[in-house]
Length: 120
Image 1 (tube, rainbow, N blue to C red):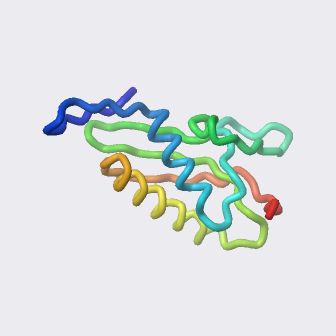
Image 2: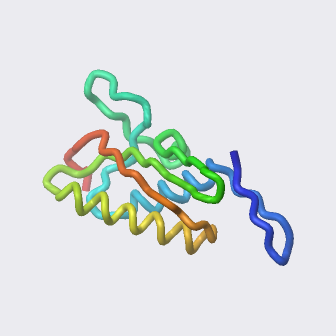
């Protein structure tokens, strides 16, 4: 699926993969995020950290009429407050998507797939 925007300059089509890539880039810049995880269930209790080119595997973009909903699967750093990290990711991703792509996001759902010691 994709989003069609009509501007004074013409038509713009934004695919869900582009939205997922921008959202993933914004999310991993937040403090306490180790990386993005796959949206599929954990195998053997270990979540795989996705690389930048695979962010769309860890983010689901859904559309209901004019509303956009985003589900993000992340891995957080050990010893951080998970609720604060989730709130920061939500606000950062919403801000970046609105500023960069001009999209109004209805909801951003955060799913914690694992807790790891960060590689800092």
